[in-house]
Amino acid sequence: TKFEVGYLIGSLASQSINRRLARALVKLAPPELELREIPIRDLPLYSYDYDSDYPEVAKRFKDAIADVDAVLFVTPEYNRSMPGALKNAIDWASRPYGQNAFTRKPSAVIGTSPGLIGTAVGQQHLRSVLGFCNSPQMNAPEAYIQFTPDLISDDGEVSRESTAEFLKTFMAEFRVFIERVLTVLPRQR
Ligand code: FNR
Image (tube, rainbow, N blue to C red; front, side):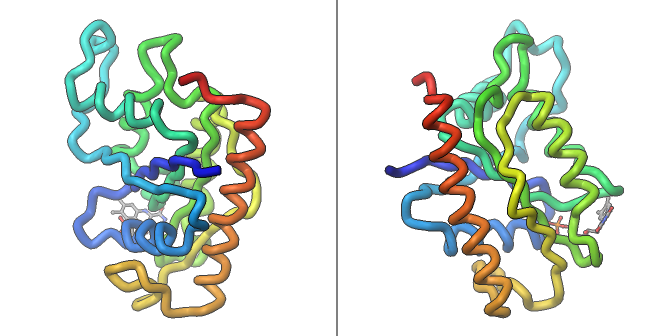
């Protein structure tokens, strides 16, 4: 079975190391996973004033979340949390009240930073938010990738074999997790 996976990159930076990580994950994913980016860059800052009339860009974003089988978050840690841009995107997709696009949507979280703990604290914040949004999350493996210069090239080639193997396992496990969740909670199309 094929699964469509939308991935969100928490960084808006042109040289984002998390974008490199995302490119690597696309390459290392099992063939059953069809990955596509769901961009967050052009979303305005959310307010509930928009609830009665979402702007086109936010509708498109929210529909994109609703249309995939699962969501993968590839995000840096900013000040020991997720970047504001990512939180803003999640807020858009979760509203209006009662129309939360994440509910029952399987997800996984991964990220990289030059720091030794490789986004671990930021991921915990994100997991707490996803828990509230009723997204079943893959608990393990966890993936805290310390970025060293040249670990992943611009086009997503991983230079260290053990890291490439680990990322491959992460994506293979995500496939298994998605299949399991969708067996119990089939998507309402
Ligand atoms: C950071 N950085 C950072 N790193 C980390 O490991 N823990 C942290 O809490 C923070 N905090 C933080 C805040 C802000 C505002 C910035 C801009 C950066 C450093 C960060 O890991 C580094 O800039 C990475 O390159 C960010 O990933 P992207 O954006 O390149 O994908």
